Length: 277
Figure 1 (cartoon, helix red, strand yellow):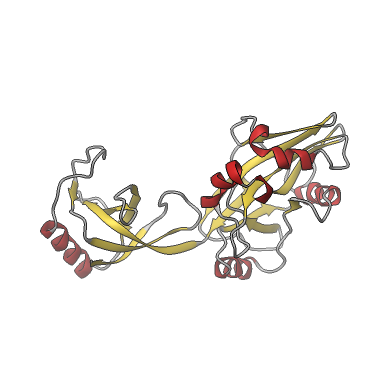
Figure 2 (cartoon, helix red, strand yellow):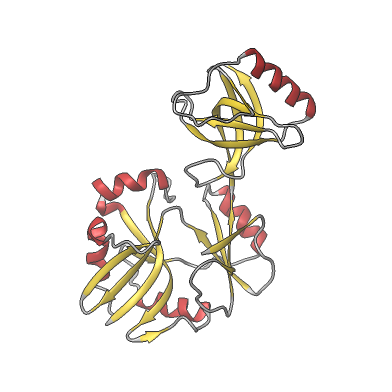
């Protein structure tokens, strides 16, 4: 599991790939069968019937492939929001993007260097099937990150060249995510003496809580926001747990939030602006 960092690592000792927005999975091919497991070890072969059938066609006796199951949107980008629908209704739209190879034809490859494992992996994947190889991104790390961000991708993964495959969290794999800006509805403000102020966010229209955002605006705007919050004070939304330091507000205040791209809930989020409907 890669470690999240704010900036990609620099220098020639790293390889870089696109971070795909999907379900981390392993394909295990053995004795003419193919099984697909989730990151937590659940057997989801029955949910990925088409991909399992394709995996059986790989020209290997046995293998363990590490990768991401994704579905693409109309721009050709991996779309996490559409993935669950595709699993149940559009099996033919699923792809498995393979980025590592743990085992091949009776040989444990985990002690090999990552670039060597990936070279072998690329050699066993045909070009015209829905199991595809995660290509390395050539160039300088900051330039790659800029292009990934401009393309609307979730981020990039950097892998230390020469590193072995290690289970669990590792700093030999680093993920750098891109930020996006979205509009949300304000549920309330959490304000405690001596602590940072956080705004609690909801999906527009539904009042469904999606996370909190650090109030990073200047002092004048913070005070103006607090005034609006007091003027629009209301009861807590239904089913929200008690938060003693929170001033809840009635519907009507919209906010602009900068947050990590590719997350179901807000992460590393900051409030940029607010206004009344």
